[in-house]
Length: 474
Image (cartoon, rainbow, N blue to C red; front, side, top):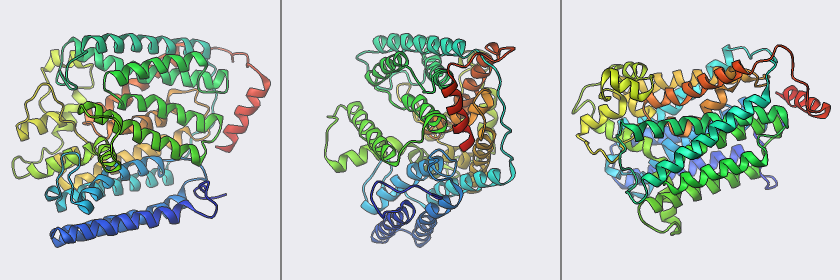
Protein backbone atom coordinates (compact mmCIF):
# COMPACT_ATOMS: atom_id res chain seq x y z
CA UNK A 1 0.00 0.00 0.00
CA UNK A 2 1.42 3.38 -0.96
CA UNK A 3 1.56 6.29 1.41
CA UNK A 4 1.50 6.15 5.17
CA UNK A 5 0.24 2.98 6.86
CA UNK A 6 -3.17 2.71 8.50
CA UNK A 7 -3.44 2.76 12.24
CA UNK A 8 -4.90 -0.31 13.98
CA UNK A 9 -8.30 1.45 13.74
CA UNK A 10 -10.29 0.41 10.71
CA UNK A 11 -11.00 3.17 8.25
CA UNK A 12 -8.81 5.81 9.93
CA UNK A 13 -6.09 7.01 7.59
CA UNK A 14 -3.14 8.77 9.17
CA UNK A 15 -2.81 11.68 6.73
CA UNK A 16 -6.39 13.08 6.97
CA UNK A 17 -6.49 12.44 10.72
CA UNK A 18 -3.17 14.23 11.24
CA UNK A 19 -4.34 17.09 9.03
CA UNK A 20 -7.52 17.53 11.10
CA UNK A 21 -5.58 17.34 14.39
CA UNK A 22 -3.03 19.95 13.30
CA UNK A 23 -5.84 22.13 11.99
CA UNK A 24 -7.64 22.00 15.34
CA UNK A 25 -4.42 22.83 17.20
CA UNK A 26 -3.81 25.72 14.81
CA UNK A 27 -7.35 27.04 15.26
CA UNK A 28 -7.01 26.90 19.05
CA UNK A 29 -3.67 28.70 18.79
CA UNK A 30 -5.11 31.51 16.66
CA UNK A 31 -8.10 31.88 19.00
CA UNK A 32 -5.74 32.08 21.98
CA UNK A 33 -3.65 34.70 20.20
CA UNK A 34 -6.73 36.80 19.43
CA UNK A 35 -8.01 36.57 23.01
CA UNK A 36 -4.60 37.69 24.25
CA UNK A 37 -4.70 40.67 21.86
CA UNK A 38 -1.41 39.73 20.20
CA UNK A 39 -0.18 41.82 17.29
CA UNK A 40 -2.01 41.21 14.04
CA UNK A 41 1.19 40.19 12.26
CA UNK A 42 1.96 37.59 14.94
CA UNK A 43 -1.56 36.16 14.73
CA UNK A 44 -1.28 35.98 10.94
CA UNK A 45 2.11 34.25 11.19
CA UNK A 46 0.70 31.68 13.63
CA UNK A 47 -2.25 31.00 11.34
CA UNK A 48 -0.03 30.63 8.27
CA UNK A 49 2.38 28.34 10.15
CA UNK A 50 -0.26 25.87 11.27
CA UNK A 51 -2.13 26.04 7.96
CA UNK A 52 1.08 25.00 6.21
CA UNK A 53 1.79 22.36 8.88
CA UNK A 54 -1.64 20.81 8.34
CA UNK A 55 -0.66 20.09 4.72
CA UNK A 56 2.54 18.27 5.71
CA UNK A 57 0.89 14.85 6.23
CA UNK A 58 -0.33 14.82 2.62
CA UNK A 59 3.08 15.94 1.32
CA UNK A 60 4.72 13.19 3.38
CA UNK A 61 2.33 10.58 1.99
CA UNK A 62 3.36 11.47 -1.55
CA UNK A 63 7.09 11.20 -0.86
CA UNK A 64 7.65 8.57 1.86
CA UNK A 65 7.16 4.85 1.20
CA UNK A 66 4.48 2.91 3.10
CA UNK A 67 5.87 2.08 6.54
CA UNK A 68 9.30 3.67 6.36
CA UNK A 69 9.03 5.54 9.67
CA UNK A 70 12.64 6.73 9.42
CA UNK A 71 12.31 8.38 6.02
CA UNK A 72 13.80 11.91 6.23
CA UNK A 73 10.46 13.60 5.50
CA UNK A 74 8.71 11.57 8.18
CA UNK A 75 10.49 10.99 11.49
CA UNK A 76 12.85 14.02 11.44
CA UNK A 77 10.17 16.38 10.13
CA UNK A 78 7.60 15.09 12.62
CA UNK A 79 10.07 15.53 15.47
CA UNK A 80 11.08 19.03 14.39
CA UNK A 81 7.44 20.06 14.09
CA UNK A 82 6.56 18.58 17.47
CA UNK A 83 9.49 20.12 19.35
CA UNK A 84 9.36 23.56 17.73
CA UNK A 85 5.64 24.09 17.20
CA UNK A 86 3.77 22.05 19.84
CA UNK A 87 5.10 23.97 22.89
CA UNK A 88 4.49 27.24 21.02
CA UNK A 89 0.89 26.25 20.27
CA UNK A 90 0.28 25.24 23.91
CA UNK A 91 1.62 28.53 25.29
CA UNK A 92 -0.54 30.64 22.97
CA UNK A 93 -3.70 28.49 23.05
CA UNK A 94 -3.81 28.03 26.84
CA UNK A 95 -2.06 31.28 27.82
CA UNK A 96 0.11 29.27 30.23
CA UNK A 97 3.89 29.35 30.38
CA UNK A 98 5.94 26.31 29.31
CA UNK A 99 9.71 25.80 29.40
CA UNK A 100 10.22 29.30 30.76
CA UNK A 101 8.33 30.93 27.87
CA UNK A 102 5.30 33.03 28.82
CA UNK A 103 2.53 34.08 26.40
CA UNK A 104 3.94 37.61 26.35
CA UNK A 105 7.28 36.26 25.08
CA UNK A 106 5.74 34.99 21.83
CA UNK A 107 6.73 37.44 19.10
CA UNK A 108 6.56 37.60 15.34
CA UNK A 109 10.31 36.92 15.14
CA UNK A 110 10.01 33.80 17.31
CA UNK A 111 7.15 32.39 15.24
CA UNK A 112 8.96 33.07 11.96
CA UNK A 113 12.26 31.54 13.13
CA UNK A 114 10.62 28.32 14.35
CA UNK A 115 8.39 27.99 11.28
CA UNK A 116 11.19 28.71 8.80
CA UNK A 117 13.41 26.12 10.51
CA UNK A 118 10.86 23.40 9.73
CA UNK A 119 10.24 24.76 6.22
CA UNK A 120 13.95 24.98 5.41
CA UNK A 121 14.61 21.45 6.62
CA UNK A 122 11.79 20.05 4.48
CA UNK A 123 13.05 21.96 1.43
CA UNK A 124 16.60 20.70 1.94
CA UNK A 125 15.52 17.07 2.29
CA UNK A 126 13.33 17.19 -0.81
CA UNK A 127 16.16 18.79 -2.81
CA UNK A 128 18.61 16.02 -1.87
CA UNK A 129 16.08 13.29 -2.60
CA UNK A 130 15.54 14.83 -6.02
CA UNK A 131 19.15 15.32 -7.09
CA UNK A 132 21.30 12.81 -5.13
CA UNK A 133 21.45 9.32 -6.61
CA UNK A 134 21.13 6.37 -4.19
CA UNK A 135 24.42 4.61 -3.48
CA UNK A 136 25.12 1.40 -5.35
CA UNK A 137 24.84 -1.81 -3.32
CA UNK A 138 28.23 -2.89 -2.06
CA UNK A 139 29.43 -5.54 0.38
CA UNK A 140 32.72 -5.14 2.23
CA UNK A 141 33.92 -8.29 4.04
CA UNK A 142 34.37 -7.62 7.75
CA UNK A 143 35.11 -9.67 10.83
CA UNK A 144 31.82 -8.84 12.49
CA UNK A 145 32.73 -10.86 15.57
CA UNK A 146 35.60 -8.42 16.18
CA UNK A 147 33.31 -5.46 15.59
CA UNK A 148 30.94 -6.94 18.18
CA UNK A 149 33.77 -7.32 20.67
CA UNK A 150 34.82 -3.69 20.21
CA UNK A 151 31.25 -2.49 20.68
CA UNK A 152 30.73 -4.48 23.85
CA UNK A 153 34.04 -3.28 25.27
CA UNK A 154 33.01 0.35 24.68
CA UNK A 155 29.65 -0.24 26.36
CA UNK A 156 31.28 -1.85 29.41
CA UNK A 157 33.68 1.10 29.74
CA UNK A 158 30.73 3.50 29.43
CA UNK A 159 28.91 1.66 32.25
CA UNK A 160 31.98 1.88 34.49
CA UNK A 161 32.39 5.61 33.79
CA UNK A 162 28.69 6.34 34.33
CA UNK A 163 28.73 4.41 37.60
CA UNK A 164 31.79 6.31 38.81
CA UNK A 165 30.36 9.73 37.94
CA UNK A 166 26.98 8.84 39.48
CA UNK A 167 28.56 7.77 42.77
CA UNK A 168 30.85 10.79 42.79
CA UNK A 169 27.99 13.22 42.24
CA UNK A 170 25.45 11.48 44.49
CA UNK A 171 23.47 13.93 46.63
CA UNK A 172 24.38 17.03 44.64
CA UNK A 173 21.62 18.97 42.82
CA UNK A 174 21.09 18.11 39.18
CA UNK A 175 23.19 20.37 36.94
CA UNK A 176 26.03 20.91 39.39
CA UNK A 177 29.24 21.48 37.45
CA UNK A 178 27.47 21.90 34.11
CA UNK A 179 30.14 24.33 32.96
CA UNK A 180 33.09 22.11 33.80
CA UNK A 181 36.21 21.78 31.68
CA UNK A 182 38.17 19.61 34.09
CA UNK A 183 38.37 15.87 34.63
CA UNK A 184 34.67 15.37 35.37
CA UNK A 185 33.62 17.23 32.23
CA UNK A 186 35.99 15.19 30.08
CA UNK A 187 34.72 11.99 31.71
CA UNK A 188 31.12 12.94 30.94
CA UNK A 189 31.94 13.69 27.30
CA UNK A 190 33.83 10.42 26.87
CA UNK A 191 30.98 8.48 28.48
CA UNK A 192 28.46 10.02 26.09
CA UNK A 193 30.69 9.20 23.11
CA UNK A 194 31.15 5.56 24.15
CA UNK A 195 27.45 5.14 24.95
CA UNK A 196 26.62 6.07 21.35
CA UNK A 197 29.42 4.32 19.45
CA UNK A 198 29.51 1.10 21.48
CA UNK A 199 25.82 0.15 21.06
CA UNK A 200 25.93 1.21 17.39
CA UNK A 201 28.81 -1.18 16.68
CA UNK A 202 27.01 -3.95 18.57
CA UNK A 203 23.88 -3.41 16.49
CA UNK A 204 25.77 -3.29 13.18
CA UNK A 205 27.60 -6.53 14.06
CA UNK A 206 24.65 -8.44 15.45
CA UNK A 207 22.42 -7.72 12.48
CA UNK A 208 25.04 -9.37 10.27
CA UNK A 209 25.82 -12.26 12.62
CA UNK A 210 22.37 -13.09 13.98
CA UNK A 211 19.83 -11.19 11.93
CA UNK A 212 18.85 -9.27 15.08
CA UNK A 213 20.01 -6.02 16.64
CA UNK A 214 21.10 -7.51 19.98
CA UNK A 215 21.72 -10.71 21.93
CA UNK A 216 20.52 -11.21 25.54
CA UNK A 217 23.96 -10.19 26.84
CA UNK A 218 23.80 -6.93 24.91
CA UNK A 219 20.33 -6.20 26.27
CA UNK A 220 21.56 -6.78 29.84
CA UNK A 221 24.57 -4.52 29.37
CA UNK A 222 22.50 -1.71 27.90
CA UNK A 223 19.86 -2.18 30.60
CA UNK A 224 22.51 -1.64 33.27
CA UNK A 225 23.66 1.52 31.49
CA UNK A 226 20.05 2.75 31.31
CA UNK A 227 19.54 2.24 35.05
CA UNK A 228 22.72 4.12 35.94
CA UNK A 229 21.84 6.95 33.56
CA UNK A 230 18.31 7.37 34.94
CA UNK A 231 19.62 7.25 38.52
CA UNK A 232 21.95 10.11 37.60
CA UNK A 233 18.91 12.13 36.47
CA UNK A 234 19.72 12.00 32.75
CA UNK A 235 17.56 10.60 29.97
CA UNK A 236 18.33 12.13 26.57
CA UNK A 237 21.54 10.11 26.16
CA UNK A 238 19.48 6.91 26.18
CA UNK A 239 17.48 7.93 23.13
CA UNK A 240 20.49 7.92 20.79
CA UNK A 241 21.41 4.19 20.92
CA UNK A 242 17.73 3.21 21.11
CA UNK A 243 16.80 5.18 17.97
CA UNK A 244 19.84 3.83 16.12
CA UNK A 245 18.89 0.25 17.03
CA UNK A 246 15.27 0.84 15.98
CA UNK A 247 16.44 2.24 12.64
CA UNK A 248 18.58 -0.82 11.94
CA UNK A 249 15.83 -3.18 13.11
CA UNK A 250 13.22 -1.52 10.91
CA UNK A 251 15.60 -1.41 7.98
CA UNK A 252 17.29 -4.82 8.14
CA UNK A 253 15.24 -7.10 10.38
CA UNK A 254 11.50 -6.40 10.22
CA UNK A 255 9.28 -3.31 9.87
CA UNK A 256 8.04 -1.71 13.07
CA UNK A 257 4.24 -1.73 13.34
CA UNK A 258 2.20 1.47 13.73
CA UNK A 259 0.92 0.25 17.10
CA UNK A 260 4.49 -0.17 18.37
CA UNK A 261 5.33 3.38 17.23
CA UNK A 262 2.35 4.85 19.11
CA UNK A 263 3.04 2.83 22.27
CA UNK A 264 6.74 3.70 22.14
CA UNK A 265 6.08 7.43 21.81
CA UNK A 266 3.65 7.36 24.74
CA UNK A 267 6.14 5.42 26.88
CA UNK A 268 8.91 7.94 26.13
CA UNK A 269 6.59 10.86 26.96
CA UNK A 270 5.61 9.26 30.30
CA UNK A 271 9.26 8.54 31.16
CA UNK A 272 10.39 12.05 30.24
CA UNK A 273 7.74 13.76 32.34
CA UNK A 274 8.56 11.47 35.28
CA UNK A 275 12.26 12.37 35.14
CA UNK A 276 11.34 16.04 34.75
CA UNK A 277 9.28 15.81 37.93
CA UNK A 278 12.06 14.02 39.80
CA UNK A 279 14.53 16.76 38.82
CA UNK A 280 12.19 19.32 40.37
CA UNK A 281 11.78 17.24 43.54
CA UNK A 282 8.17 16.33 42.69
CA UNK A 283 6.33 13.05 42.36
CA UNK A 284 6.68 11.26 38.99
CA UNK A 285 2.89 10.79 39.02
CA UNK A 286 0.83 13.92 38.56
CA UNK A 287 -2.28 15.33 36.91
CA UNK A 288 -2.73 15.05 33.12
CA UNK A 289 -2.23 18.80 32.64
CA UNK A 290 0.98 18.82 34.66
CA UNK A 291 2.20 15.73 32.81
CA UNK A 292 1.61 17.47 29.47
CA UNK A 293 3.42 20.60 30.64
CA UNK A 294 6.33 18.54 31.96
CA UNK A 295 6.62 16.78 28.63
CA UNK A 296 6.48 20.03 26.69
CA UNK A 297 9.07 21.50 29.05
CA UNK A 298 11.33 18.51 28.36
CA UNK A 299 11.21 19.02 24.61
CA UNK A 300 10.73 22.80 24.70
CA UNK A 301 14.36 23.86 25.18
CA UNK A 302 14.72 24.92 21.50
CA UNK A 303 11.69 27.21 21.83
CA UNK A 304 12.97 28.55 25.14
CA UNK A 305 16.46 29.54 24.02
CA UNK A 306 15.19 30.79 20.65
CA UNK A 307 12.73 33.04 22.46
CA UNK A 308 15.53 34.28 24.73
CA UNK A 309 17.80 34.92 21.76
CA UNK A 310 15.11 36.72 19.76
CA UNK A 311 14.36 38.95 22.77
CA UNK A 312 17.98 40.10 23.07
CA UNK A 313 19.25 40.14 19.48
CA UNK A 314 19.66 42.65 17.91
CA UNK A 315 18.34 44.86 20.76
CA UNK A 316 21.15 43.99 23.23
CA UNK A 317 23.77 42.56 20.85
CA UNK A 318 24.35 42.44 17.11
CA UNK A 319 24.03 39.35 14.95
CA UNK A 320 27.31 37.44 14.96
CA UNK A 321 27.47 36.72 11.20
CA UNK A 322 28.80 33.17 11.46
CA UNK A 323 31.19 33.69 14.38
CA UNK A 324 29.75 30.85 16.47
CA UNK A 325 29.95 28.42 13.55
CA UNK A 326 33.60 29.27 12.98
CA UNK A 327 34.30 28.79 16.69
CA UNK A 328 32.47 25.47 16.61
CA UNK A 329 34.67 24.15 13.82
CA UNK A 330 37.80 25.22 15.70
CA UNK A 331 36.61 23.36 18.79
CA UNK A 332 36.04 20.00 17.17
CA UNK A 333 39.22 18.89 18.90
CA UNK A 334 38.62 17.00 22.19
CA UNK A 335 37.39 19.47 24.81
CA UNK A 336 40.40 19.29 27.14
CA UNK A 337 42.83 19.82 24.24
CA UNK A 338 40.79 22.71 22.82
CA UNK A 339 40.68 24.42 26.22
CA UNK A 340 44.44 24.00 26.68
CA UNK A 341 45.05 25.58 23.26
CA UNK A 342 42.47 28.38 23.20
CA UNK A 343 41.08 28.58 26.72
CA UNK A 344 37.46 28.06 27.82
CA UNK A 345 34.88 28.68 25.08
CA UNK A 346 33.38 32.15 24.88
CA UNK A 347 32.13 32.47 21.32
CA UNK A 348 30.33 29.16 20.78
CA UNK A 349 26.56 29.49 20.56
CA UNK A 350 25.59 28.65 24.13
CA UNK A 351 28.39 30.75 25.68
CA UNK A 352 27.65 33.70 23.40
CA UNK A 353 24.05 33.67 24.63
CA UNK A 354 25.18 33.36 28.27
CA UNK A 355 27.31 36.45 27.79
CA UNK A 356 24.54 38.40 26.06
CA UNK A 357 21.95 37.75 28.79
CA UNK A 358 24.43 37.89 31.67
CA UNK A 359 23.94 34.30 32.79
CA UNK A 360 27.06 33.26 34.70
CA UNK A 361 26.01 30.29 36.85
CA UNK A 362 28.54 27.45 36.81
CA UNK A 363 26.02 24.90 38.09
CA UNK A 364 23.30 25.29 35.48
CA UNK A 365 23.40 24.86 31.74
CA UNK A 366 21.54 27.32 29.56
CA UNK A 367 21.38 25.03 26.57
CA UNK A 368 21.04 26.15 22.99
CA UNK A 369 19.31 25.09 19.78
CA UNK A 370 19.62 24.97 16.00
CA UNK A 371 17.05 27.76 15.32
CA UNK A 372 18.49 29.96 18.08
CA UNK A 373 22.02 29.73 16.67
CA UNK A 374 20.94 30.34 13.08
CA UNK A 375 19.02 33.45 14.18
CA UNK A 376 21.86 34.62 16.44
CA UNK A 377 24.22 34.60 13.46
CA UNK A 378 22.12 35.57 10.44
CA UNK A 379 18.71 36.71 11.63
CA UNK A 380 15.36 35.38 10.43
CA UNK A 381 16.70 34.54 6.97
CA UNK A 382 19.43 32.47 8.62
CA UNK A 383 16.82 30.19 10.17
CA UNK A 384 15.70 29.17 6.69
CA UNK A 385 19.22 28.92 5.22
CA UNK A 386 20.85 26.86 8.00
CA UNK A 387 17.86 24.50 8.22
CA UNK A 388 18.07 24.07 4.45
CA UNK A 389 21.70 22.97 4.76
CA UNK A 390 20.83 20.50 7.53
CA UNK A 391 17.99 19.12 5.43
CA UNK A 392 20.35 18.69 2.48
CA UNK A 393 22.68 16.64 4.70
CA UNK A 394 19.85 14.41 5.95
CA UNK A 395 18.58 13.78 2.43
CA UNK A 396 22.09 13.07 1.15
CA UNK A 397 22.82 10.62 3.98
CA UNK A 398 19.52 8.84 3.37
CA UNK A 399 20.27 8.37 -0.30
CA UNK A 400 23.75 7.04 0.46
CA UNK A 401 22.37 4.26 2.69
CA UNK A 402 19.48 3.25 0.43
CA UNK A 403 20.06 -0.34 -0.70
CA UNK A 404 23.38 -0.58 1.21
CA UNK A 405 24.18 -3.45 3.57
CA UNK A 406 25.73 -1.33 6.36
CA UNK A 407 29.23 -2.67 5.74
CA UNK A 408 30.66 0.85 5.43
CA UNK A 409 30.67 3.61 8.02
CA UNK A 410 29.11 5.97 5.48
CA UNK A 411 26.07 3.68 5.35
CA UNK A 412 25.52 4.40 9.07
CA UNK A 413 25.71 8.21 8.74
CA UNK A 414 21.95 8.57 8.36
CA UNK A 415 21.42 6.40 11.43
CA UNK A 416 23.67 8.62 13.52
CA UNK A 417 21.97 11.76 12.19
CA UNK A 418 18.45 10.72 13.14
CA UNK A 419 19.56 9.07 16.40
CA UNK A 420 21.34 12.21 17.64
CA UNK A 421 18.65 14.63 16.42
CA UNK A 422 16.85 14.84 19.82
CA UNK A 423 20.14 15.92 21.44
CA UNK A 424 21.71 17.97 18.65
CA UNK A 425 18.54 20.01 18.07
CA UNK A 426 18.84 21.38 21.61
CA UNK A 427 22.59 22.03 21.50
CA UNK A 428 24.96 24.43 19.78
CA UNK A 429 26.93 23.64 16.63
CA UNK A 430 29.88 22.26 18.61
CA UNK A 431 27.82 19.35 19.95
CA UNK A 432 25.74 19.04 16.79
CA UNK A 433 28.87 18.28 14.79
CA UNK A 434 30.73 16.29 17.44
CA UNK A 435 27.77 14.02 18.22
CA UNK A 436 27.92 12.69 14.65
CA UNK A 437 31.56 13.28 13.68
CA UNK A 438 33.16 11.38 16.57
CA UNK A 439 31.00 8.22 16.28
CA UNK A 440 31.57 8.26 12.53
CA UNK A 441 35.35 8.47 12.99
CA UNK A 442 35.32 5.66 15.54
CA UNK A 443 33.07 3.48 13.36
CA UNK A 444 35.31 4.07 10.35
CA UNK A 445 38.41 3.06 12.34
CA UNK A 446 36.82 -0.07 13.85
CA UNK A 447 35.37 -1.25 10.54
CA UNK A 448 38.69 -0.54 8.84
CA UNK A 449 40.63 -2.59 11.38
CA UNK A 450 38.12 -5.42 11.08
CA UNK A 451 38.19 -5.64 7.28
CA UNK A 452 38.91 -9.08 5.81
CA UNK A 453 40.62 -10.03 2.58
CA UNK A 454 37.97 -12.66 1.97
CA UNK A 455 34.33 -12.84 3.06
CA UNK A 456 33.69 -14.34 6.49
CA UNK A 457 31.73 -17.62 6.36
CA UNK A 458 27.99 -16.99 6.65
CA UNK A 459 26.27 -18.16 9.82
CA UNK A 460 23.40 -19.75 7.92
CA UNK A 461 22.01 -19.88 4.43
CA UNK A 462 18.58 -18.85 5.73
CA UNK A 463 20.03 -15.69 7.32
CA UNK A 464 21.82 -14.79 4.09
CA UNK A 465 18.60 -15.18 2.10
CA UNK A 466 16.75 -13.08 4.65
CA UNK A 467 19.27 -10.26 4.28
CA UNK A 468 18.89 -10.41 0.51
CA UNK A 469 15.10 -10.13 0.75
CA UNK A 470 15.31 -7.18 3.16
CA UNK A 471 17.81 -5.28 1.02
CA UNK A 472 15.73 -6.02 -2.02
CA UNK A 473 12.79 -4.17 -0.47
CA UNK A 474 15.01 -1.09 0.03
